[in-house]
Length: 74
Image (cartoon, rainbow, N blue to C red; front, side, top):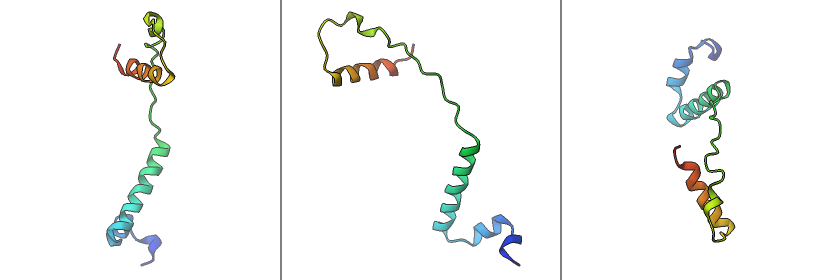
C-alpha cells in the first residue's frame, strides 16, 4: 500500500508522537488560515478621560492610565 492511498488516520497513528504533534500544529495553522478570528470593533470609552487631570503625566504614566481605562467595561 503506497503512502498516497493510506488513510490519513493510519498515517498519523504510525508517526512518532513528536512528528504527530507537528502535523497537528500544521493542521491547526491551515484551519485558522481559512477560519479567521472575528475581530471586535475597538472601544474608545477612554477618550476624553484626561480632561479632569490637573497634574502633568509622563508618557509612561499616561500609557498606564490609558491601559486601565481601555480594560474597564462600559
